[in-house]
Every structure is written in structure tokens, then in C-alpha cells.
Image 1 (cartoon, rainbow, N blue to C red):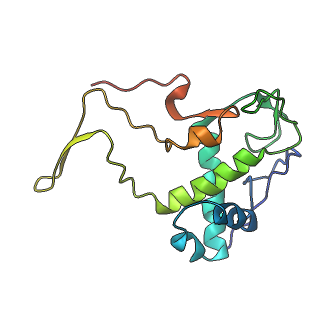
Image 2: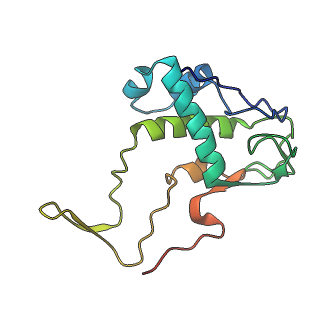
Length: 167
């Protein structure tokens, strides 16, 4: 069954499920210094699924600045009273380019991420498959680069209100 991407243009579309379409994702990712072999090999329907998943992932993992423009909009953008990284007001009838870029980057991240980021691992023993993390280590579900892409527009991950879990 094919997937239909309905792009939020800034018009508070109640049925929107994405911030970008496949052509926009291709254009954005072509400008990034990334290995895109896997992305380029995807068919249109699979790209659409990753783009929709990336949009939902962003809305689930980022606390956006400002307030939703409409009570009927499906996604986090457009927003009222949002400001960009220079603290300039963001128009409430757009989806900022940083959000569109983040959507493409997260789509590729979801495709290629095997959760092999080993930061914080103190020991790995394969005979019994044991992973021991350093004392007090917390791994955010958000890639570290996302905060730089979205700086000013929202806070990814545990930056607002979350605390690490200590057993």
C-alpha cells in the first residue's frame, strides 16, 4: 500500500504528515556531506515512509519554541511567537528551512542508524553479551548534531525537563 505525503506548508493543514516531500529531501540531502547510498537506493514509497517517520520523530523529540498556530494543525509547525537562532521572529505561516533540513537529516539518520554510537560504554564483552555504561551516563535519543540544526527553534532530547535515570 502506497503512502501519501501531505506537506505542511505553513497553512496549518489538519491532515499534514510531513514537513517535506521526497524531492525536497533529495535536494537537501544532496547538499550534506553524508553517505547517501542507502537513501538513493530507496523507492519513492519507502522514502515517503521515512520522511513521515522523521517528521513525527521530530515532533515527538523536540520541544518547539513558541505556540502552535492553530488548534487543528496536525504537526508542531507552523508556530506563533517563535524566534530563530538570531532571536528574530519567525513568520507564523511557514515551516522554517532548519525544520525542513532537520526532517531530511533525521529521515536519513533513521534509515542508517543502527544505534551503534558507543559513547559512554565502559566495557563490552561478547561471550556473554554484556554492556556496562560509565557511571551516570545518559544517552539522549536525539543525535548530538540536531541541537545545532534547530538552535533557537526548539530543544531536542533531554534539554528541557528531562532527567537521567539512576538505578
